[in-house]
Length: 317
Ligand SMILES: CC(C)(COP(=O)(O)OP(=O)(O)OC[C@H]1O[C@@H](n2cnc3c(N)ncnc32)[C@H](O)[C@@H]1OP(=O)(O)O)[C@@H](O)C(=O)NCCC(=O)NCCS
Image (cartoon, rainbow, N blue to C red; front, side, top):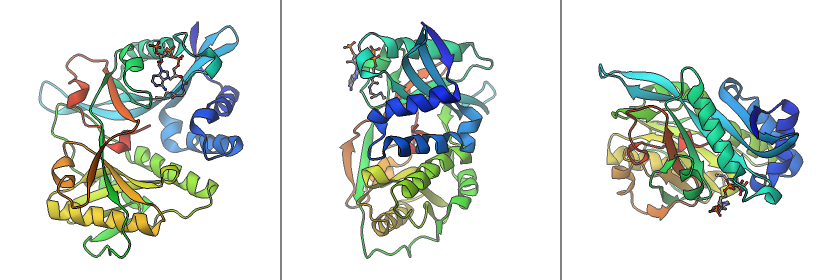
């Protein structure tokens, strides 16, 4: 068995096969279009790789890696920028499951990453199949809770200073406060735009309008969000609220925008930075997350355990 990088033809063939897991409600052809479009996005062109576990000419399992920025505090107290690799789309065809191929793939990908120079700080993934499979390969999970707010008609966005459009993302991201912790992952503007590219792709393929905004700002507080058309929700990608009042104003704006886009709810991933505010917003309900369990495998000494790392939704791949 060997690990190889997929050719463009092999990627297209994998899209056809993985449609069974991730394609609905798109047709196979639409799913292939979605994948081709996302691969052409600047964030993917820069740091996305498709890996195949091969046995002779046969593909046994596949996955993707996406390079993202992470920051590790050095001995002088300053954060040093490095990368972490997000692992996505781990897939074994049904007839080949249960033979350890996905596990072997995860182990070979990790060994390959560890041998790269410079090696990434960490590997992360968002498991839809629970923790045990990936624990075998050295990943540890972090708790995963969501807060849900119903979309609401009739609410105005008057309490925020402005709604944001795609072009505002780089500046907003620059202004957001980053976590004051030894190690954190922080999305680039291109990584955030990749979520919006998904939104644009689904809006086009499913022939539905995009929400009128991708975030809101009030004072020095800000939120960025994206539509998940398949799940009928607006997801908060990243939020930096300086006060309860700001959090309420930003989330009310999200509820209004979700409603006007025909979505039923707003979903916020629980994080230490958002918890104190979101928990006090009236109507917010806390639920155990279904899927997307954050898991981390450190590749450097000195990295904190997964339970002490923040995983904002903007990092999801
Ligand atoms: C998950 C998946 C990649 C596993 O591939 P595989 O080659 O069979 O994996 P391995 O043989 O290395 O490991 C199999 C283990 O994964 C576990 N697993 C597989 N699917 C699972 C699921 N839906 N929920 C929980 N565990 C699951 C099996 O229980 C098995 O554990 P066991 O050996 O203790 O019985 C494969 O089932 C698949 O492609 N599923 C559809 C796509 C998907 O959900 N991918 C994961 C996204 S995070």
